[in-house]
Every structure is written in C-alpha cells, then in structure tokens.
Image (cartoon, rainbow, N blue to C red):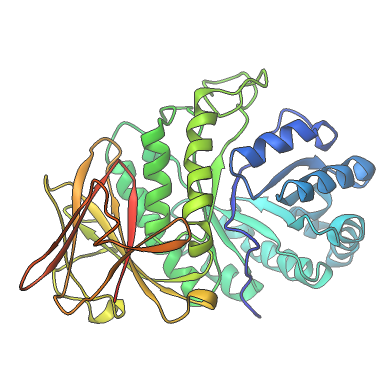
Length: 408
C-alpha cells in the first residue's frame, strides 16, 4: 500500500463544534483557513444532512481545507451489528460524500481500549475496502503505542494518530511524557511506513493551563522536531460551558479569544515558511541537547555518521538552554538534500543556539520561506564565523522556535 501524500501539511483540530454540519457557515470556514487550518474534522453529520454536508464540503474546497467527516454510520462500534451491516453503512456514507474532493476520510472513533482493537481492525479493513482513495481516521490513547501495535500492523492503517495533553500541566514531567510518546509512536509509524498525527492542547481544562503563544510554539516545534507529519489541536471551539474548559481559540459565544490570534500567527508563519518542506522530507532521527529524555538519544558532538551527510559537528547554546536536534532527508523536489534542525526545547527561555559545521563546508544554507539563503550573506541579527577548524552559525530562538540549515 502506497504511503499517502498530503495535498498540504495537515493542520487542524479535534472536533468539539457547538453545532452540527448545518451550522458550518462560510465565515466559520474562512476563519479556519485564516487561522492556517488545512485538514480538520467536521461537525456531526449523517445521511439526513446530505445537502448541508455537501455545501460545507464545497466551501471547504473553496478555502483549501479537507475534512475528516464525523458520520455516525462509520464509527467502528457499528461492526457489532455485523460485518455486512457495517459494510453497507460505510458504502452508503461513501456514496454520499466519499467522492467529493474535500473529503479526506471518515472518522472511525477515538481512544479504543485494548480489548476493542480487534473490532477496530475489522472495521478499518472494511472502511478501506468501501472507501477507495480515502483515509479512515481512528485516534489512539496517549501512552498506548505498544497496545495498538497489532491494530496498526494488521488493519492496513494509513495514518497513525494519538493525543497527549499533560505537557500543559504545571509539573515538568508532562514534557517528558510528551516527548516519550513521540518516540514510541514515531517508531511504530516508521515500522509500517505511515504518517504520524499528533493532537496537542489548545484549551485550558482540568489542571491544564490555557496555552500562551510560547506554549503553542513549543508544542508545535517539539512535534515537528520529533517527526510529526500532521498536527491537530484540542480544540478550536471552547466545549460547552461546564467543568473548567476555557480559552480555546473560539469561545462558546463565537468570539475569537487571544488564543485564536496566537495560533493564527504560528500556523500562518509555518504555512508560509516551512509547510512545503515538511510535507516532503523524511525523518532521520532526533537527539536531545542539555536535557535527556527516555528513548531519545543525547546528541554527542561529532557523531554524525547515522544522521546523513549534514557535516554537523556540534550544537550548543550560550546559556545551556535545552534543545532538540533533528535530521531530515528530502524527497520529491527536495530529493538528495539533508537538513539539520535545532529547536529551543523550552516554553519560557530565549537563547542563542549555535550550529557548528566542519570547515570543508563551503555554504551554510538557511532554509525558510520555501527557499535557501546563503547564511554568510543573509544572517541579519544572527552570527556567522568561519574559523580554521569550524564554521559557526548562531541564531536566536524563542521558546519552541526552530531553525533549519543545509550544509554544502
């Protein structure tokens, strides 16, 4: 089975709409697109809402957004009515919406338990058979990579998805869980050669804080550094006014909260500067600097043999701020190129980070805005020094910010 290639790098959100598909207006969809969304989940729909669903799909197509349709007919639990009944329901959903260009796939469910994986596997296989060209979507639990491994390998899974939110708890242990999950799920995704989608936090609730712009940037930067191929947020709309849900990009009154503008700034910048590159590179490994994590190897200066032809010999920062160092290899229009990325692995500290390359490097290309700039002449307020034994490139990074280089 060929690995899927996204039309655009997927940015979206977990569905907590305050309305059904009939309430998805053009203004709402335009605002989602203006916030940088490219692939997301739909409100609740069904066969009875066919006219409204097709209208929403037309509008999403107009604004460059694909939808994962949340249709009750396709939930994996329908398999309990028998394979034939589930197949008929899936076929009807596909006949209704499956051929629309804005339809990415159908939602099959969320966080199944280990004893439900066999039913999920059967449902997923049927979804693939009855939805040609589509990607069934089933989301997994945090810390569940080992428990869903059999499902992923036997179902024909085309997209591996999971969520994790305790990185926004006050304790620093949440960040450790966040990165450990990436290591475990990315390993599984690479074993079966499928993209990895991570769902991160955009609404305060329980003990989770309302994310700041630095929190958003850190979550996204770490996700990309750890090999995420798609990013969703929980959630875009503030859930119903109960418990202590607060501060999602859109309030329960339809008002844009400050978090909308924080997320808009982050995603529009990413779409303009990096999305095309990340949509056409393969992850080759991530290493930690200054702070160790389970299942992530520490970066040791000079050890570059396993990371591709990058010529990198050291990464450091002025203040000893923790970082992640990631290696990517390009494909398609970027084929034959190797990239190194350093990410400020804090949500509260700015620092100057240094890439040190071997002296035989002739050009240090800074990669952004879908182009490569010779860093020697295009470093602005950063630093470029060529010494006898090393080439030093220094860049200031905000919390969660990253820079990408290619050495030639």
